[in-house]
Length: 153
Image (cartoon, rainbow, N blue to C red; front, side):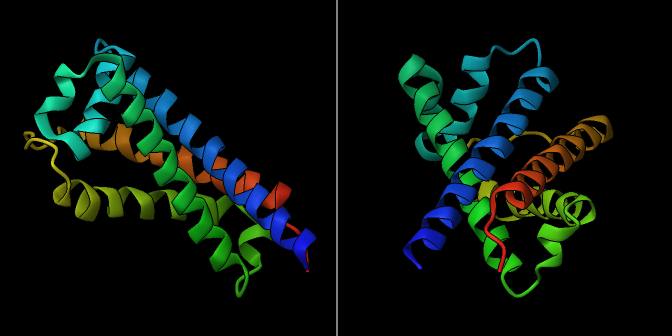
């Protein structure tokens, strides 16, 4: 039992890290010419408000940590759902895409509005499309990593 629990924890951590890496690298490409530090500071702004943009590398580090903690939490949710719905691990393509879009919705409808991040203008249709694409990649990285690493019943 302890071995299975350790395997699940490992799958959650690595799936969260894979998904978070895919997402943040996509953000670095999408939001150019903003620097990676500025992008990570914008993540930290959810916790620090506008002070994050004056916090240098410390705020960027906080943003990076927050980003990966959120990714790992979503991986935990996905693997918890895979218990009663093992198809999420047997056939991860469509569930991964759907989960990535679910994460996009949760982040934009719940997490960001409840954060301390400053208000932003509504994104253009192109930016919405790129955000959906980035989150589809997030979901695929998460689902395929989870499918590879999660213990089977």
